Structures are given as structure tokens and as C-alpha cells.
Image (tube, rainbow, N blue to C red; front, side, top):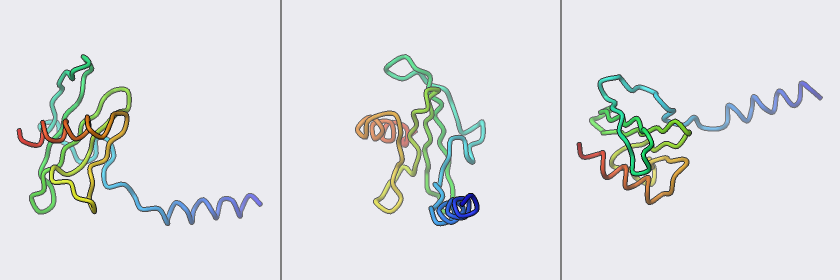
Length: 99
């Protein structure tokens, strides 16, 4: 039974697509800055150009909240967010993709 469960975990793990971005992936120190948000929390805001010139944004808070994705988000390549509302996530995207 243990081998069957382990086999299923391996199959499911390999079948699930990997997320394109994880906190801190591919960010250099010169691409990031710390800012204070409207709730007086520190956010680490990172912005970089990757691939074919696509601008990506990553914003990370100490409590695990984040906004990560391309500045020109599409249905096939959406912005991902966690720990805040969709409206707040898009406000951050709009506000920082233009710097």
C-alpha cells in the first residue's frame, strides 16, 4: 500500500505544471527595492525584463502575500496573487509596471 501511495504522489507531482514564478526567482538585488505600503507594511518590489523583452513584476510581503507576473498580463499568462484582493493586486501591478 505504501508503494502505491508513493507512486501516486510521483505521478501527480509530475502531471501538475510547475508555476512559472516562485518568490525570489530570477530577481537580482538591483531589480528590487523595499517600499512601505498603505498599511505600513514593508513590501519588496522587484521588476525585471525577461525573455523577449517582457517586463515582469514581483511584490512580496513578509506575511506571505505576493503579486507576481508579467506587466502585460493575459488570460494565458496571468498575474498571480496571494494574500490580497484581485483589485489590490492589479493596483500594485499598474502602479509599479510603469517605473
